[in-house]
Picture 1: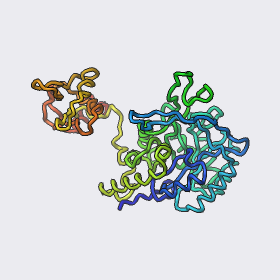
Picture 2: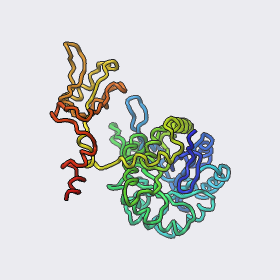
Picture 3: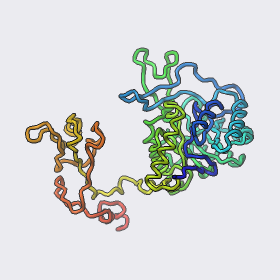
Picture 4: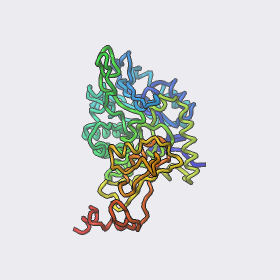
Length: 437
């Protein structure tokens, strides 16, 4: 069977599935239940400095976005870091790590952007015997207004500075958690690496408002008639997370830097996609909050079965395999041509493909053939955009079929070129232009 044991910056766990720093990792009771269910590790919910307690709201903390079947697509949370006493958390972390030595125990930390504050908390966290720390530079609400969280993560110089402080004052691996609320994710990742961080984790939540109550005109979740922006997470943010992971993995300045992938991981397939784009493991939150801790059983079984079926012996066989195939738009092969094909045996004649194409695309799907209601693609009009594939309610009914080299493209009247090699010499290819110059 495939070996899914994970070694992330020297932190070992029986599988690559960790729980992210969030409500599910706020106390020993939850974490023990998670380990019993099979999770490979946890990132303990963010600890703050000793002092006045953090005070959370006592009303709704989550806004939500649902699909048509009421399936949860995204959560917007306004919860702060742990509101439990520091010493209570430290005591529980130490005990759980002692009881579960084979599981990864990483502790998330957020304190003011002052060197003494970090120097003070690092030794007491290290004393617990945990395996590493994660610097929370991503939280977009509550703490950021106090000069922490994403307020630090949006300034590369601050990231580098704090990472350097931590590396100078602890033996533990330092993971920097990055905020997606920034224009270019590569700059904070580079700063973390320059500061000596061992890895980055991303993405943290996306600053958002999920909706407005149209009775009292308050953003959701509503607290006594008022609302605030929060952090968006869940399946809806996965595309954002995948892109940012790929950007760091393929950036020449951070290539090879360990990445812990976060953002909408719900199934084994999600995890495999993150790892294929360069993540060394994944962290999960919303899926556990939606379906419970035992969802990890499906993740472990699914990943193992897929790896066995594909002949992948270990996680190293898949980590980063897709990264070289991520490129900039200008380098895509413009000689490649694909056309939509409708499987008439699967078609239920709903007409969604026709309406979408007729109203908003290229009028390439007819709805009447020989006097019958029947949907077919007119190849001479089809540009291969695949909108019809995405709106079709029947999986596999419409597929994109590449035209073989030498085939006449009826839409353009040109012959499909032979291979990518032709594109590398094409005058419209920026790489060919650069070579010629």
